[in-house]
Length: 124
Ligand SMILES: [Zn+2]
Image (cartoon, rainbow, N blue to C red):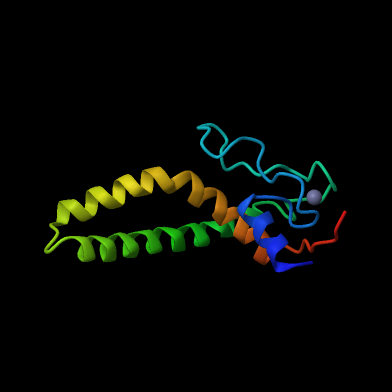
């Protein structure tokens, strides 16, 4: 397994075991079921739900994404503007959060599955 292949599989939200099957059944910017993970891989049959509520822990990854977003927003605003006001922070965080929420929801689950899940790459 090359780390390049794993990186591609993570960014493409592919199955950890075969790097081919999709983890999600709908595109990222569809409004319904956008973060619903498929039950199993359509290519290799790997079970994505090792135990009930497996993806509950992805909430912590999602929280980390949110904190990173707030910090990034504050740093960027402070670099770009002389003395940004509170409403500027709040508006920028709210807008960027709304835009990036689907991505953060999905990639929190992808990263959680790749790091905590027991699925290992096998080729195919
Ligand atoms: Zn698979």
